Image (cartoon, rainbow, N blue to C red):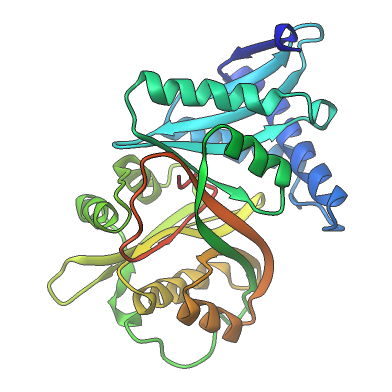
Length: 313
C-alpha cells in the first residue's frame, strides 16, 4: 500500500475534492457510530471553510495522500507551525480508504516536519469516541494530557437569560493592540502562543470569526475568547482565561452571536463552575475530546478551551 500513496501539499485546485472528502469522512464515521445524523449539516462544499482558514493562516502547510492508480484523494491533514509548537489540524480519510494506513502516513509526515524543524512539541485535539484515531496518535507517540466535555447550547432568539454574570462589564471587542497581551497571557497559562491566530481572528477576512477580551482594572488582559459562526461549524474557542469566572463572562458575551441557533463548546471536564453554568443554560453533552501532545508539555495554569477552527493545538 505504501507504494500506492503519493504525498503532496494541497492546492486551490484540490478544494472541491478536499471538501467532498472531509464531508463524507466525518458524516460516514459518525453515522456508523450511532449519531443517527450527519456531523456536518451544511452543504458539502461549505466544508471548504476549513481549507480556507487553515491555508490563510499557514499557506502550504498541509499534506494530502493521493492514490497513484486513480489520482483520487485518500486523505488530508493541515499542520500549523507556531512560535513554540506545531498544531496538527483536522485529519480526514476518505471512507473508501479507511483502515489501510493512510492516516499513519500523514501523521508520520507531520512528525517528521516537527523534528526536522526543531520544534519540541506537536499538539492536537481528538475525539475520545474514535478508538482508531486514538490508536493512530498514541502509536505515533502522542499522550493524552487533558479531557474535554463537548456540549451544545441552543441559544434562544432572545439570547441567554439567567441573571447577571460577574465580570460581564469587563468583556469588550478585541483590538489589534491587544494581540501582544493575548500572547503573553496564553504563554503564562498554556506555555504556547500564536499571535497570527489572534490577529487573523480580529481581522476576520472570511467574515466568520469574532474575538473578545476580558480587561481588568489595570487595563491588562485576563482572558480572551474567539468564536466561529459558519454553516459548517458554530463554535466558541479558543479561549484562554485566568479562572472560571472570567471564562463564564467571556462565554456569556460570545453566546450573543448565536441567538436562534446552536453552538458547540469544548470545556475542561474538571471545571465544574463552568460546566454547571452551561447546564443552567440548557447545554447538552454530545462528545468527549482529548488534548494530545507529542513531545514536551507543561500543565495549564488557568483555563484553556480548544477549538477546531482555527485549530487550537
